[in-house]
Length: 290
Ligand code: NAP
Image (cartoon, rainbow, N blue to C red; front, top):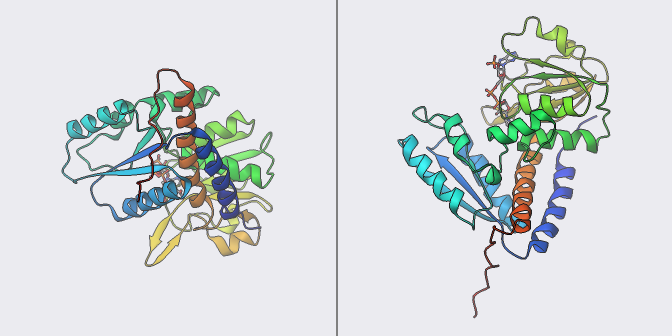
């Protein structure tokens, strides 16, 4: 079976539009991008377009490649304080003169739409999640949409990044899967992947997972995206693997859900800001009179 993310993303989008209408104000999502990485540009455009479709006010802060850490921290301080900004993200990767961990730690955890702040990651690890990183959150939604059994399942995660591998291993652990987390130093990767009922691959290495590395009937979530010429490919050797197991396609699997979960996070942050008495939401912008 092909585990497509498109229909689910469309379903979630309709629900989010209703929640935005119910807010009574226009929620604001700011995106900070430093430099001109072409892949980042594409992702940022997708996020801003989707925000517009849902009724979220999207705003881009595009800084030059030579921006210093201090300059970026100063912008983050302003966004933390701006009440019209309900959530914001700093698009990764950042240029080498900037330490991403220092930047993420400077974001007010209540505005951390990407769920990458140490407080949010820590709460997730504790089993009491607040804001969950978009990609792992989307993966869990997809797993539930296809009614894949998680409790008691052997789950293998390949890749241990703070954005995908670690948080998805926490989410699967919190749902009572038995989780193995693999990485570049893992000896005999196939020995682990072959045991997986649920296999999540987030590496960025095209066709890393071959059909002899997966169990018959497994459910495989391919997070990897690599551009090979004009084609976008995943970490799974899709055609042979899909004859043996259920797999998410690349594109059209995890990607649409990642964008939608960022929107859901933003709506949740706006709803929380509304519920907190000290948070004054900006009034809904009036249409200009003709
Ligand atoms: P990352 O930070 O580069 O992490 C890659 C991980 O893969 C690391 O933990 C690394 O191990 C591990 N790894 C590398 N080679 C390996 C190998 N041969 N065997 C086993 N593990 C290996 O990447 P990321 O940010 O998590 O992203 C991973 C991929 O997902 C990328 O292609 C990215 O573009 C894609 N992505 C897609 C979406 C989406 O919405 N579709 C969202 C986020 C990311 P070490 O820790 O030992 O170095």
